[in-house]
Each structure stands twice: as C-alpha cells, then as structure tokens.
Length: 88
Image 1 (cartoon, rainbow, N blue to C red):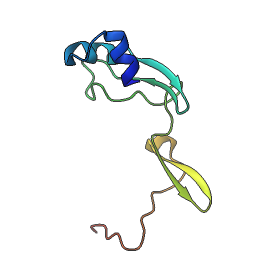
Image 2 (spheres, helix red, strand yellow; image 1 turned 90 degrees about the vertical axis):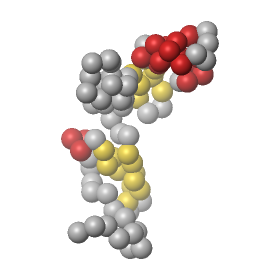
Image 3 (cartoon, rainbow, N blue to C red; image 1 turned 120 degrees about the vertical axis):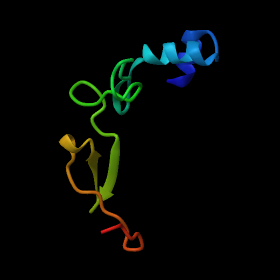
C-alpha cells in the first residue's frame, strides 16, 4: 500500500504521501483497507467493521485462529503465556 501511495503521489514528500494514503481504498488478503479522514478523533486510523477490515488482532488458541480485536467482533479473550505478569 505504501509503494502504491508513493507511486500515486509521484513523490516521497510527506505531505504528498499523506494525501495519497488518505485516498487509499485497497482490497487485499485481510479485507478492504481505507483510512479514517481528517476530522475523525482517530485520524488516519484504519476503518474497521462491515465492508472493511474485520480482524486486526488475531491469536492462535487451541489450534484455531481467533479475532481478538475489535471487541465487537472478538471471538475470544486474549491469552498470555504464564511468564507474562499482568497488573492486577
């Protein structure tokens, strides 16, 4: 996607590249990739949900790949190895 944006921008100038990335609407192996617009609280974040990427964080559990995020689409709870100590 970045290489395509550089090609569309005709430059690696950051302002031109940002404009090209904002116009990205790409369908790949993980789904449709598009970015949130200026003015959004999460500007330039990836669009998710129906018609867009639906699994950004995946984890293998019991031989199955499960979606962990976004929460509305989660199929399980994130598990950590025993040596990882999380705050209580």
